[in-house]
Image 1 (tube, rainbow, N blue to C red):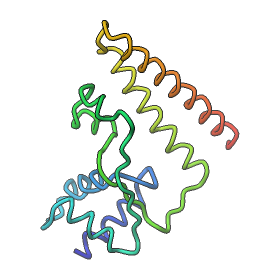
Image 2 (cartoon, rainbow, N blue to C red):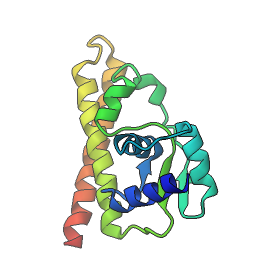
Image 3 (tube, rainbow, N blue to C red):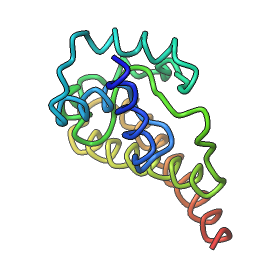
Image 4 (tube, rainbow, N blue to C red):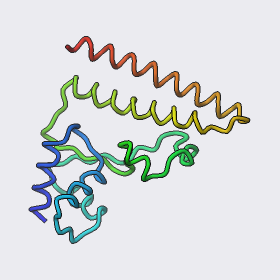
Length: 154
């Protein structure tokens, strides 16, 4: 098990983002052909008990259950949306630029998903259309604000 946690440290040190889904880490371990004698939930429990890691519970978004019909879980994962807890190394503190870049990436993913939802929206449902338009506008505004912050950083 120590070998697995040591590999998790390496994975997190090399990850593009300072915080990643445990499910993504699990996939990386599988790609590395680690012989995993436990489940992903078992990995999560081991990470919780190890002082090198900080775990964050999955955040439930308001209305998330309402948009499950838009994309399957597999399709969401292909776009970088993973369900479940997140993990980071306690000693890998993100810079302001890393934090803004992380948020911008998530907002970009959200905006792309909302555009896909718009394309398949029920045409006769004005309430759903209004909600999607509002969400698209908010995501676009947040994109502009984050890009402005990034421009100030460079």
